[in-house]
Image 1 (cartoon, rainbow, N blue to C red):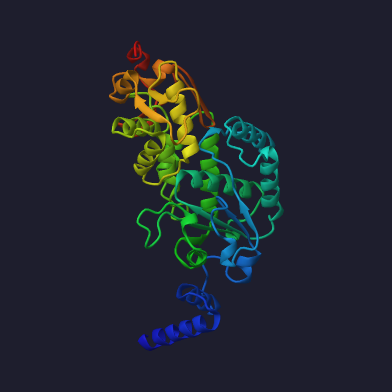
Image 2 (cartoon, one colour):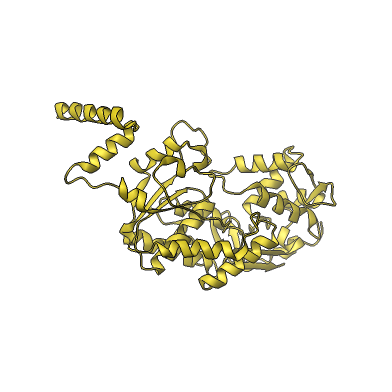
Length: 381
């Protein structure tokens, strides 16, 4: 056995010298060439022929040489409405939301979504390789893509998922964009890469339906799921659930972390964003969306934040401080929703008004229907 292992290592090194491949890549390619050895995903020509889908063009997939065709999935699904409607109507809704939030920086509107969906569908008879990360932003994109592929009748075995939440040598992994082309090239040879099974495709479809439903009743089951293929999905849905207003103060987890950062001395919005993001196990929220959340708390009928200057939207340099009401809410002495109301979508759920039927309960770590009307704690600032 030791002789065979040594011989195989010599063959790997010989291939490295000939092709210039890394050890991991050369080893994987040699294993794939051996009779009876199943690769975890497409290799060689199969990888080159596949449609590669990823979360953004900050990732250097073209530089790997593995991905001649790359489709970048651009949508921030944890923000704004994502109701259970047909593909064309959803494209219009998402485009309108992004434009209204000044987040359509390419001015592509619904055309970008239509072209994205057209490319995905045009490859329905071929292979797909999905490159994504563990955070909420990416996990929602993954289930949208997989649910769409299931609708198109694409068999699970033609879909390969490469998904990581960490990387050797990077203390706080933030995303695929941190990796070099060579580091990306090695991912298909690791256990982060796997061909999907019908069970994984079915789970993604169920998760997408639960996310888009008009009530949050299905979120808990997904949050509690432990899938070996969609291994980050459960924790992503748990994090999503914590964006519901809490029973104790009416704040989402992100809002509370922003207020806590300001209370702890973050005097500018940029600093508050960095400190709030540092509390996340897997940071997912971009600064634009975080600043918009700060702006809503500063412009509320009873503001929780004082922003300076006050006559323009919050940006990185905006000065921030807690108001008296903000301090009371952060301490649990008043309820943000009762004071100011809410108008926010979480997937397909529209949270609106001064009383919402669903709250996050930190005690049970579930979304519940509150027994007590929190408006009794919102009489005064």
